[in-house]
Image (cartoon, rainbow over all chains, first blue to last red; front, side, top):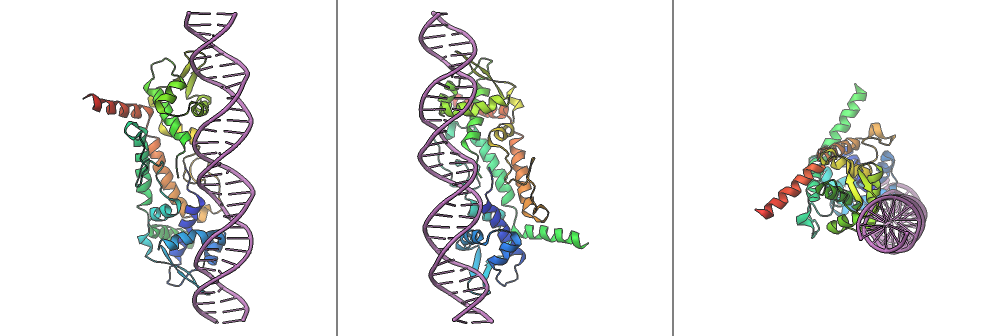
Length: 144
Length: 144
DNA sequence: CTGTTCTCCTAGCATATTCCTAGGGTTTTC
DNA sequence: GAAAACCCTAGGAATATGCTAGGAGAACAG
């Protein structure tokens, strides 16, 4: 019942892009340094985000990645589902649920449904913008 | 981000015990048949529940297992945490959280905390009694 | 007092997943 | 044309998952 590094790093990566969202591409090198994550591993993670159209890549020197949309248009759920796969706690609930022949008899499915809803309710109502705001708050504290 | 069979089977096992909670021990053999789970695998799972004092075992012929407490005194969270380990979505939140030197800087931790709370809120407010009641409702539908 | 029905214990293993590392290739800018 | 970037694929160690197997020990029924 854990979120893997892939999903966690993807979120930090996207947050980093959102914070440095000036229009100029941000290189993986810089993100990797700031986030203290292996650049090579980040490459693989951002490839997924790139193919899904979450980011735009700019090749060559001075290249890097840019967010395709504004930070408020990415929910945490979008990012985690893309990188982690379904966030449903079991295979038999949520969208694209596998059918199970015990389904009708299965009271525990209700538990998983409730859990699924609770999880979605958190991740689908948080956007990158929220995280950027938290980051800003945090910085303010040091400034004041 | 999945609950493994261990936790899911443990819940079904405990629910089965709660439903057949007459005072007489229920054999694993019967539970395994009803739940369509390998008896040998269930043995390993119930060993955990037994060691933790969730169930009492009765050895020998006509033996089996009995709940130690009443169904309403077991939350789904109790059962899942025992069998799955912590339900926290990442290692750095929840009780017994590992320290992380990025902690202070880490905005994503807020996301994981919220997720953790949401999950706990579901599993800690559901008891075996609730599941038994659902089971009863379900049966009623067929009877009417 | 013996056979049957149970629980108990431990070992092992095939498969999948996780978390990377490595080594190149291609594109663009200076 | 060299450097700085992205792009692509392969592999691999470590761990977790989801069991199966085999037997030892306990208690009851007849």
